[in-house]
Amino acid sequence: MLSYRIAQKRGRYLPGLRKAPARPKGEQTMYSSTVRDHASRPRNRREMDAPTTQGSATYKRCGDKLTMYFRIEEDIITECTFIARGCGPVIAVASLATTVLTGQSVDQAKKLSVIELHDILGGMPVAKRHALLLVLQCLAEALDQDHKLLEI
Image (tube, one colour):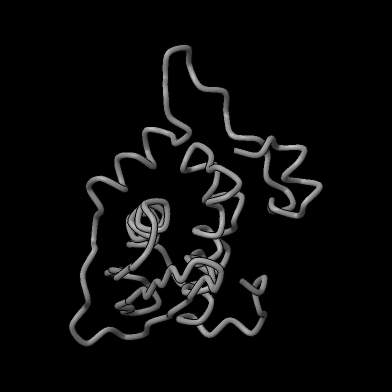
């Protein structure tokens, strides 16, 4: 695994993100307990019947694909599900995002940032941070945001 500084020099990190929190001694993983939990037991991982809107994104380097489905009633996201074909972190981030976004207003959902997701997850290895962008790309497409996120 690349060190944070080397990854930074090679452009493999997202601006504004801090290093992942230090792991307690004896912990043998680079993923937080939140990431491991959502990767091993994903929530809301299914296709939605008759969604109000949906968004899709693909990470071209490794072929990870994510589609998120949203049911919106009276400007509130009442249900959010996803289908992913990719690595564990993509599944974990999408799973967490569905739990975070459900019950939020569309305006609140539009304000969700890479840094917020990163912090909620308890950190993410540099090489897997594309998972954060996939989720936000799906969200932007689904909510018709006019700005284009980082090209992934």
